Length: 287
Image (cartoon, rainbow, N blue to C red):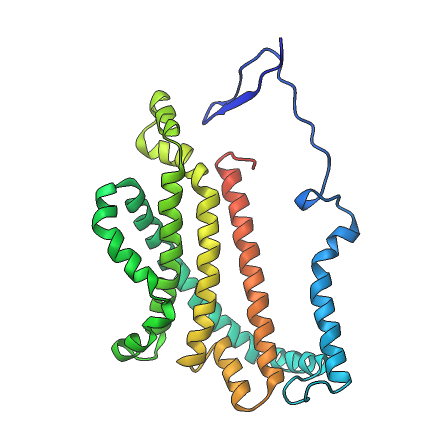
């Protein structure tokens, strides 16, 4: 008799379907299926290093004017100067606080609204068209109206960020709910799970990949909206730091702001990836 597979029942562990189920042995490999050799680990750094080399050559041979494209050494000196003075950390702290507020308010609201649209066809019929119309307008398209309504204070940035986070998370939640196979809900009823326990033990683990993708998309869009909003209507933050550098025609300050924004974006993405792994482990999913 051939060996059969093993099925995992939520809350009850692995249940064998056959008498002898052989474990699957996977070859040891690094992320993406490549061997964990230093050569493969260095691949992601090739593009930044090549760009840095071209940048250095362009400034060294005066291919681009120095005021327009300062040398990497000058940018590094400006980065250290702004770090030591505290200006860079102050701008980054203000921007990250605004982003955190937008995510903490917009993401839960989007999650609940997406569940409502996914679980209720009537809610989709009533609220779906209005939601799609609002989602079609970029977050930055609301700035002129919001400036007239709330001014250029913190409320403007927070509202823009809430909207930027709300829409992607709501769409991801709605699609994730609809993508869960109907047999999963039937399994929960067969096991006698309450609706809340079905949501936690069956639906949410199946929805996690789509939800996290939506959250990462929301954080990226919110960060872009934040920096742009700070460049247009703010007196603090990383976006304002870049505008101030442009006003003074100090492109090294502008590039430092760009580096800070990129580093913050990478750190946020890694934080969300770690949160996804922790959530999967909490729910008993090793994948």
